[in-house]
Image (tube, rainbow, N blue to C red; front, side, top):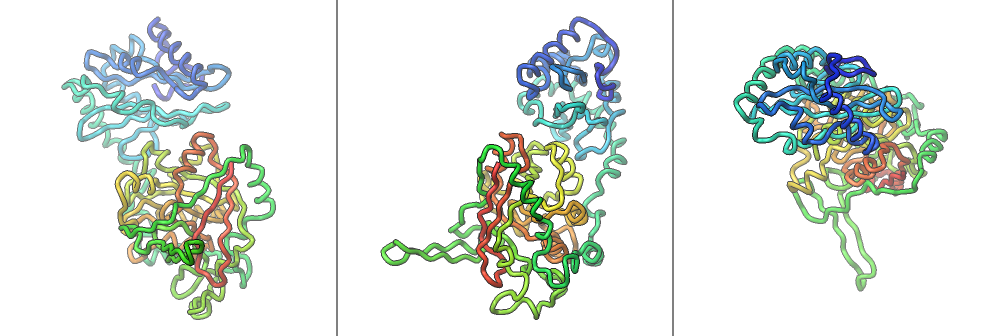
Length: 484
């Protein structure tokens, strides 16, 4: 049973030699891998599922192993093996809450066993993701094994299909829980321009730092915050967040970077229209307007002129930004290489990542959101990111303000596209830049950053941002640097 008390074995008090041996193998595997591999190998998993073509759930054992909390995977004991599959499924269903998607079941009390049902092939998969920490157990690693390793042809038998059918029949009971934990896209405000305007007025930072403020949420990066960021540097390893300039026209690059050689090829000229979905850049606070006003309530006519922005230009960041950076890697959270275009990211996704990574976003932080856009582009080629991209749903804006985010960046433009707010094209851009005064870092390449953070198991780092201070500029191409 997934809901057994911490420190005791799950399920009944069976003490059969087989169950004890399985627990021993599981614990030995954990000790050998220092907690990274939790549970027996795939052969044990195969044996744990009755080879007489009946699918059973596995036991979860929670206890002290090597002086730390561990969550182990073991076989059902003899008494449990005699029980019908339906009862095992019911045991699991008693301990579910807040499913992450319509296909997952998540036990309570930080113990996480994910049961995934593939409705097309009618397979039953059991994946485990755990985290071993002092005094608690929570999600940590990627899924236990790949579905190809776990699922064998014998599981496609009629009996296995029947067992999955029983499980699918129980899924309707979870619908109220799903609805309670995550509202459908169409019912989550803001849904239209009216609701968007209400949110805009409620969260805007206009006047918060004075009537003449030019920095917006960059004011949250204090001297103490900079010192905190510097203290994060341990190894000195650096990672660039810039994607190399794209010089060829493509579906996601309507304005290629131009590089012209001059005077015997010892000089050159660059030309680029960097706003859009191709080039790594930072947006100044005069870049986006709402109802003919910029951040802090300045009128368009007083700011945006043919000679540049008279207020809120990128030159206001001339001294550069040094702050704590936090990487939010949603594909890694979901165990996928990248998010599909059009995938919306919600507050519960951000908080689930905080829990998994062991970090919490705080005032003055720069938050970087990885959707895997560049990984998908590398694998499948470019596509029109402006028409379809994974990104933040507008409903996250109050949460971002409450956390005190100073800068927000990502591997696309942060907005989920197409927009989920009828009548508003880029709601996140508008809420961040114009309402909150948050500079956005668009089209950052976060692939190497994600790999480095995963290798070091560190999702916070010192981030430096230093755009060229073009007077009146609406932004500038950017090579932000993360240092571990």
